[in-house]
Image (cartoon, rainbow, N blue to C red; front, top):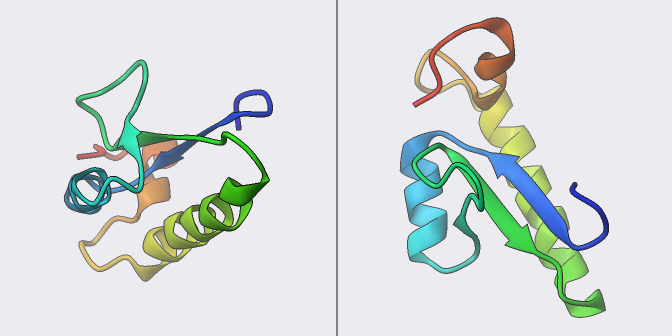
Amino acid sequence: MNGNHLADLAFLMSMRNDLVKSRRVTTHHVLPQSGWVSYWIRGEDNILAVIELFKLEYHASNTNLTGHGVMSIFVGKEFT
């Protein structure tokens, strides 16, 4: 979370592309070519949606379908 109105989340590029295409999130405000996305929290109506995105990020990182999860960025593996 950045302040009170912006959530940045990390996904594999394929999932990031799907989320951006569905307009659930935008590309990251500083790193638009990365797997990171931004979700702007505009009010209380957005709280459930951002919680679901954090759950999705958590489950994606633990599923490890591609041999490396979302959190692999923190252990030195390439994140694409």
